[in-house]
Length: 197
Ligand SMILES: Nc1ncnc2c1ncn2[C@@H]1O[C@H](COP(=O)(O)OP(=O)(O)OP(=O)(O)O)[C@@H](O)[C@H]1O
Ligand SMILES: Cc1cn([C@H]2C[C@H](O)[C@@H](COP(=O)(O)O)O2)c(=O)[nH]c1=O
Image (cartoon, rainbow, N blue to C red; front, top):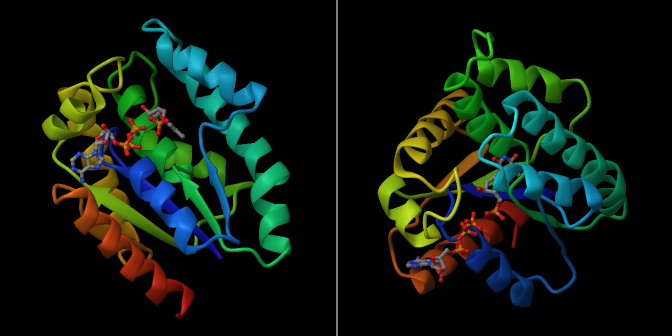
């Protein structure tokens, strides 16, 4: 079973992901961007304010393709529970916001990016969405790069809402404005239900 954690920068995904290691010691824990050389290229692009928006989308998608074939699919074939800190929804929400704000002439960026993934990707079985206001998310993240900005994250949040509206049964929304302990407890409860414990 493939479970993904999604949300804005600073919403607490990594905090939750780390806490889950103790609860599911046999699971495969992974993340995007990965730590492969594809992921390193992504990190360089994210740090570049003048990165080409389409090139950035395809770098992230290349990292996803390698992540799928090298980590996700083998782990699922072994029957593992796989927990990924960010996955395809991050592309749908973030790069759709980037493309919409750019000069690139694509009418429906979110649908365009979904279409690229539909050809090869493996959708998550369930997605835990850590829901947080854009300003608080940017504040927690430290506003250190082009993505960790209030206005940009507000656009990303709207895209996450569109994704949830389209597939309400796949998403579990968790209020990420609560304390770390309360958020972790709620995610653990949701995950136990999802894996049938
Ligand atoms: N529920 C919470 N309440 C307050 N602060 C939190 C909470 N969860 C995490 N934090 C703090 O917010 C910051 C960001 O947390 P974390 O790295 O887990 O978020 P993230 O969603 O993985 O962010 P990013 O996507 O930018 O990597 C950290 O300083 C963390 O300690
Ligand atoms: C997978 C993925 C990531 N991003 C962005 C979101 C964050 O700002 C950075 C790094 O992620 P982290 O969780 O803070 O380590 O990358 C993105 O825009 N699109 C994606 O597909």
